[in-house]
Amino acid sequence: MDAVLQRCSVREYMNKAVPEELFYELLEAGMCAPSAGNERPWHFIVITERSLLEGITGFHAHSQMLKQAPAAIIVCADMNRDKYPGVGYWIQDCAAATENILIAAQDKGLGTCWLGVYPRENRVAGMRKLLKLPDHMIPFSAIAVGYPAAVKSPGIRYDESRVHLNRW
Image 1 (cartoon, rainbow, N blue to C red):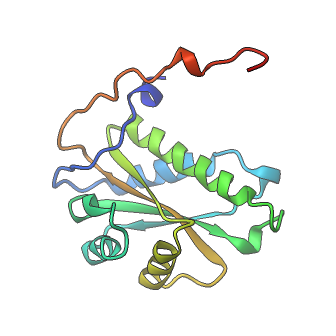
Image 2 (image 1 turned 60 degrees about the vertical axis):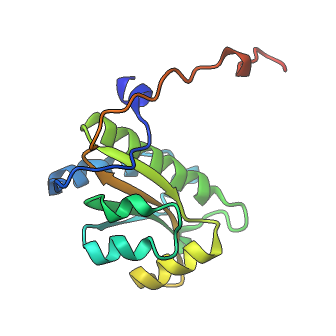
């Protein structure tokens, strides 16, 4: 529970590379996410190249932390794996994979920030062009990854007023 309760968005990072073996663990967590019909539509692009990280900031206004973060993970959906065309379960699947990565990173002492890409057309187009994605791949999210420059506490988020038992 600690990784879940302490997770928060990190926007300032140390100038310290993330070891390659940690990416394997983060991606394994992402691939363990639940998926409608076991569709598992995800593909992941790990970015450590500075020019690509900074390239994202050119079309994604809220991604400025990528100028400092040592890495990012792009979660993409492979529409060739879409078992439910027109339903959009791939969106939930990729969101679950993204969240699993965020929690795993927190558990490993890393900081992250979830950056929405889909459904913003300019972000989807920018990511497709920057990363040379094939047409059947939809970039869903970008996750800034690195060691936090400062320790931050998310505070208490549980809100009893949002809990309803059996009925509204």
